[in-house]
Length: 142
Ligand code: HEM
Image 1 (cartoon, rainbow, N blue to C red):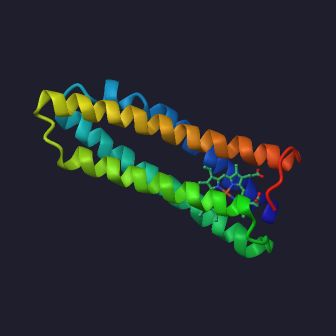
Image 2 (cartoon, rainbow, N blue to C red; image 1 turned 45 degrees about the vertical axis):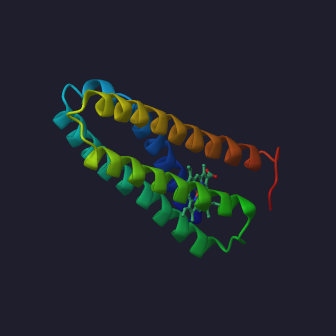
């Protein structure tokens, strides 16, 4: 049972990673005009938050069932989770209130979208690599 929950947790993380990579297209495809960019960003941020909420929910269920001690590795996951949620909300707020009719602001926000996505992808990849190395016993933070 716990094994299945952990499997869903790591599967969700991989789906999330795929979503983040796909999201890199938004500043190109979804951004033919400022309205399209704003709308695509809204849909993107909704899916982002739904997926990341599921990851946390399943992670917390695993925590409750598994009698894990609060290892540094789990604390690291929670910190990464908070950081990702925080920058996503900040990013969407900027796109929502920014004056996209201004060519320069529009360009700046499209650039910011890409940079923030790249950072989020790096964080998730780092977390996956970290957990794999931990399982393999290369590193230990318990
Ligand atoms: C509130 C947030 C989270 C909680 C409570 C949580 C909890 C857990 C727990 C209890 C485990 C199993 C124990 C362990 O391996 O240390 C686990 C495994 C894992 N978590 Fe999280 N997690 C959270 C967020 C995240 C995030 C944001 C990521 C990726 C960015 C992530 C990636 C992973 C990975 C890759 C594993 C290894 C899965 C496996 O062994 O197949 N977790 N998590």
